[in-house]
Image (tube, rainbow, N blue to C red):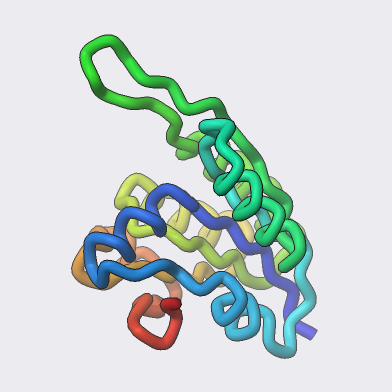
Length: 157
């Protein structure tokens, strides 16, 4: 059975599905599709923690599906900008778990991950599947993936 690691950039998916479709990502449908006839080595959802009750409920739903939820505090800067991205954490975990997986699934449209996709394929000979909103996913990431799955109405609530 094929082994997979799933890495979800929760903030990226939230904003791209809201911007692209004004809808939310359906993590249950995604899980069913991504894990069908596959053994999950690791599944991690990377999110920011604002400490509100709705967010905690959402994080518990992710855990019930099968994700480990990694949280980073949401930081609001004095200039109004915000910080809370997980790019380095996702990259480190991607490299670590690629060694134990036939396929790494990355749910993000962030072009910064094109180098990660290339490294996983060249160093570990693992496939990299990318899920993202096509119009909001970096072309370099799509081109670096073994396979690209557009997030569209079939994967939305």
